[in-house]
Image 1 (cartoon, rainbow, N blue to C red):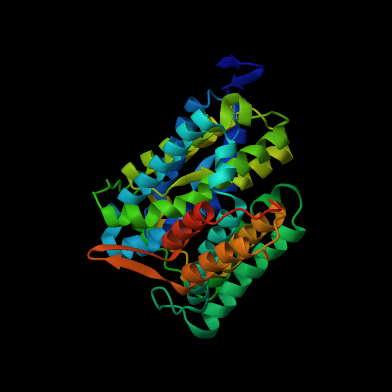
Image 2 (image 1 turned 45 degrees about the vertical axis):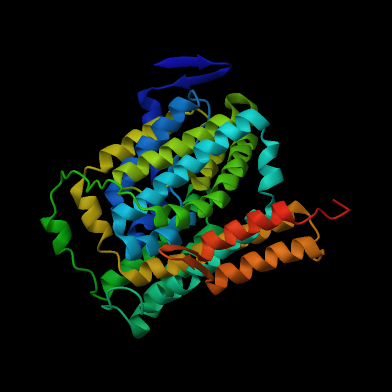
Length: 412
């Protein structure tokens, strides 16, 4: 199958299927990490990543070589939501996050892409991204030392396992060459798992007893206004990050995706994919930088490769033993990897501010950044009857409002 789309040829052939499977391998570690940490079904996450990528490719007319999968930015709100409202209620908020993307796509279509920079500048999104990483820090440390989890592995055993996983992830990400450098998360998890295996801490009986074919535990959302109010503001930062990812992929392939198919269409595809994922019980989707790195390394610019990766993900979602195997990964293994990942989220927020080149010491910028950081990290909560919003969501809303209300500096 070959479809010409304005100088971009979308070729769907068997040769590209192997490259597609490779792209899924690159994304696999991060893809399943989010559901494992938040209590969602990893097999459902595989299915919704594949389905979301196909939907994205259809909406963007098969022009952008990206793969969509589980978003790290939503780990904290999903974990809080599952504990507070259960999975169905949390999924309602996640579906609404996708609707926000859709709304933003129509605003961009009408007002132009500059509207994002005007209402959601780096001085707002940078600190919000930092808060997402810093709020998760206690969870990472707790899982690394065994104080958070099932309590089977604690003390020195937990620390040895988590530090091996962390060290391997760091070494591969810095010193790994070629393809290996694209899968540091997978390497870290594998190393921690091997150490756990040597210590005799892995029970394979659930994997042995699990069926080969199993329909994922799809879960539909149930209406929950509190979840919507709590989660939707968190989606502001990933929405802006989407813009950066589209620019990054364009720089890799040498094409201007902001114009063709247009960031309004890529945002629309991401939004519909995210809402669709929530209706099946999966985490929100986002463009994967790991896969973009693999595209740069392999020079595999054909977007059809991502369709093959999506098909591979959907097929694997129905393999019951995969979910059972992932469930055997000890908490400290994930905790070790999370220490680096959540720290990286924080650094991305810092880098967002640095790249903007704004003077953070000016009264206006100082107020916005300070309020977002302290309210988000401090866990400030606003309640009115049954209505409540806190932490990341409240910090994001406050930053958005302050940016609108406070007058611009004369120098700006």
